[in-house]
Length: 395
Image (tube, rainbow, N blue to C red):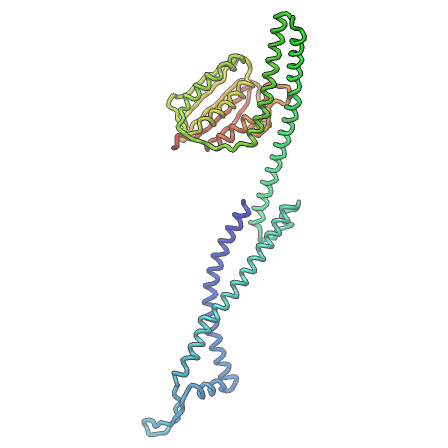
């Protein structure tokens, strides 16, 4: 999360500053200790009329009469170093070790207290800002401008994600409601026609065949609706894990074209494939096939009858671009922007047989993104193009 990043960055900077401050403080303490000693000596010797000098002479010197070179008697004070060593050591020890270490420890605990207080205060401000509808200037002071800017961005992102999740949940609930309602229609028809066949065993064969055909169509419609329920459940439970391998892209596209021949034939469409035979990608073959199947199903569903669907694969610098182009009703811009969102369907009408659970393109986008690629859609002048860009072979 961004808030953790902010704390880590500020914590690292604080550590560096504290290290520099401690070094600077140590030198300051040594200097201050030396100046204090000099000041104490000067005060004791001058303010107290030589009190320190007399005390020092009595304790650490020995006085005796001596004869100088001219034969004069003089009174001399000689230092007794063996008595002076211990006080000198204590003074040096206090000024070099005890005093600086004490100051450093005191400053360390004071700094720790200030840091804890600052973190607690910052946490309170962040909590207050995130939980209330307040302006950023009402919560954070000017010196927190960098933190406040990042928190504003974080709150904006969270609100946008929450809105997306609410819209997604609403679309999902509406879809489930529509599907549950739609299940009744084909089921009622199936029961009705089977009841007629059961009650009228002597029904003419032509009429019986007609009722059986209608019942089969309704059963297939019922199966499709049930599959959409399973699709929603599977999407909520699945965690996509890629198993990549070397994939012959040209062969995959040719095979896919053959598999869709019955659906294309029934709809009066045909596929025009344009691709080089030496195209290789490193991908999860099953997942990638699902991407292409979902896009192609969408293209067939929304194509005008008896029109051509163009599938092109082109090598680019560092990537391969696969496009699917079909002729059909132009997708409005506001719907085009939401076409890869979960549970979004182009068809608003529940009775439409073209709209699925609204997961095909959302799943396709997730798979392509996991491959490090990109999927986009364009639609204008009755022409809709889906493009999938994938990285070139990378083992």
